[in-house]
Amino acid sequence: MSYPEPARRPAAVTAAVVLLALMAVVAVAYAVAGLFVLFGTVDAFRLAAAGSAASSDEVDAMVLLVSVWTVAGVVASLLAGVLLAALAGVVRTGRSGARVATWVVAGLGVLAGCCGLTVLSGMRVFPMRLGDEDRSTVELLAQLSEAYPDWWIPLGAGLSVGQVLGYFVVALLLALPTAATWFRQPRPSLHVPYPPPHPPR
Image 1: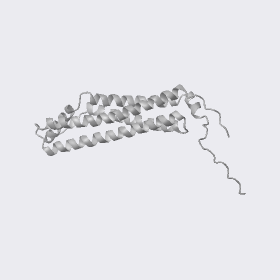
Image 2 (image 1 turned 90 degrees about the vertical axis):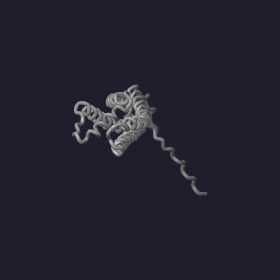
Image 3 (image 1 turned 120 degrees about the horizontal axis):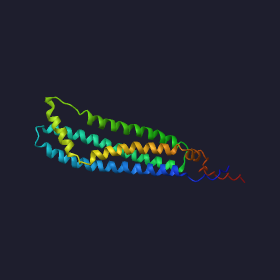
Image 4 (image 1 turned 120 degrees about the vertical axis):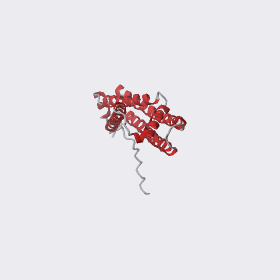
């Protein structure tokens, strides 16, 4: 059975593929940058904490917490980059279910981005309040905040906003009628039938 030649990929789908690939590159780049920032931040934090009233155990605990949190974020960004690159590939080929899978990932991405922005905004508006017995922790948190590069936290907030907008635009592009029509077209089968066996002589 022969299938008609699929129509040319619509501009909306091409734009969605490019945006997904760009988001994948940004996610991987942010993960790599996070590791470099972690090393510099830990060194600067230990240097600043050396003159504080905090004990070495408290400093080590704070370093461990920051390291675990950063590594977890790096792993999440790398996985997101791989997933976005894979989605760009399947969307580009117009495979069945690619739109639905992208919509699911986009919904989760928007949710994660909104949660991150909410937490960051909550920390700004309602800063954590500790008692007098936790003054060393307050001092360490202040020194840790100063140890980060000035551009790092605004960059994270900006990327969270960009993530939400990017997922929303991709989902919208794939919902356009031209994209829907293109994805519904039959694709030629990649199965190559084997020739029938020769009858015995």
